Image (tube, rainbow, N blue to C red; front, side):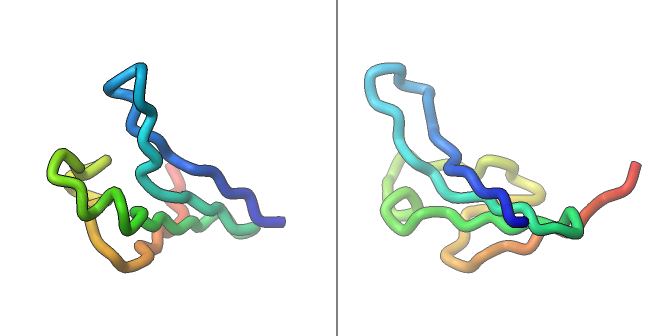
Length: 66
């Protein structure tokens, strides 16, 4: 089973902007991809400046055990 969702920038309540998509695999690892339109917007920002810098590439997010 694979679960996925879309992440939105809701900083402006009148204009929710899709930022990218997140997917979670069966083993617990995930991936995130910023949308092309979002990356090209002047006001775009990194959702997580350390782990999710803006990139046109799909970013793999390994499962982390606490």
